[in-house]
Length: 297
Length: 150
Image (cartoon, rainbow over all chains, first blue to last red; front, side, top):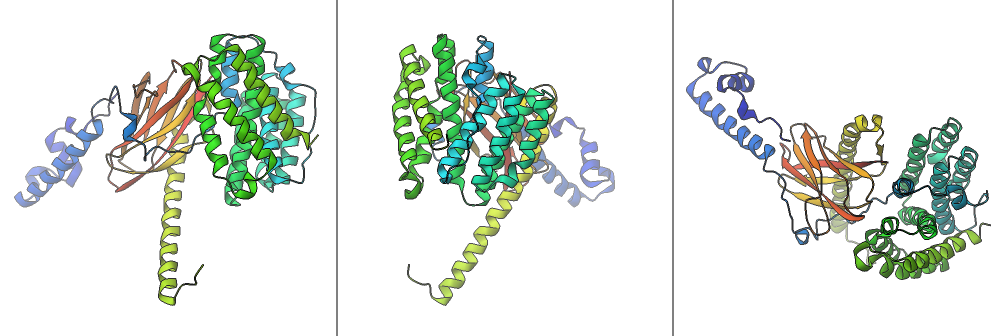
């Protein structure tokens, strides 16, 4: 689809548009100037309507230009596909109701917050409004522990309100929004690294649920959802760039090693992820999520 | 760290002020571009598309391109919404797979907005290539958001 070019307009009409007068009413010098300007405008319009996009590009031409920041998908992007491929038992994935109190460690609390938000997405899939509301309140407790309570109060209230009304798409948006609010608030506090831990916690818990569902009823289509080398690489890079204080934490070290183990399992065979690899990723993510939650339980 | 001499301090303060102002300006027009990207996405949200709250943004000169990476899942449909706050600027966005092949089902432009829609043939990494086709400004702020449909 192309935009309509300025060249489609009639010459005199263009003069009227450009100078607010008809060509016969202006001097030859002005006419020349106007024609030059018009030619320039047509050139720009010509470029704007441009050729169709290239069918193939060399991605190597972008190395320095490629944005390293990755928009981490929310769990519901994956869960949406799982839902189409079968009828997952979301309540089983959610497990028994449990609230996670804050620990004395902000890094741990950031990771914990991520896992709890991911639980929120699972509870939405299960359409369990009571669990969603509990999780919404738990999000607030953990947000307080990492000094971003103020930023997520409105989201938490909205999650509770929309879960009561069973407006599930709206609740999904609120959980996504809660993640972004936390990110933004932490950026303002120069705590971006903690924000990355929130995203990472969410991804680990989401992947734990995903692998559990795929493992329970394996198909290549379901397993393909685990083909996420970009994200594993992104999280590994983020962890390696963290401050020595954060990198020195036992839980962060555990996660780095876990990602190193997951990486070859999901990169193999261009997305053809075998059942044993799914089971192994599940074991790895369950262990690490368990460790994130152990101090809070 | 060695303390700076007064002229060096002045230069450093000026440089810092320049950087802060530059960053603030960039931030401001990316924020503006972001509101246009969401404006482009709004009608789709009303049709049931789930628009992500996270986004990419930056600024580019005329003719410049930038590739941003995204993880997409086969089974979903996606639309990328590109917005700019620069009046008269023409931008476009196209989606490529990891082999560099054009992977979108369609792309189009409407004024300050550009769109690309894709139903991924495989789960994995994709590249959204943002391009400023023409602009009256030296640098054009842009923001890109995406939405998916269940």
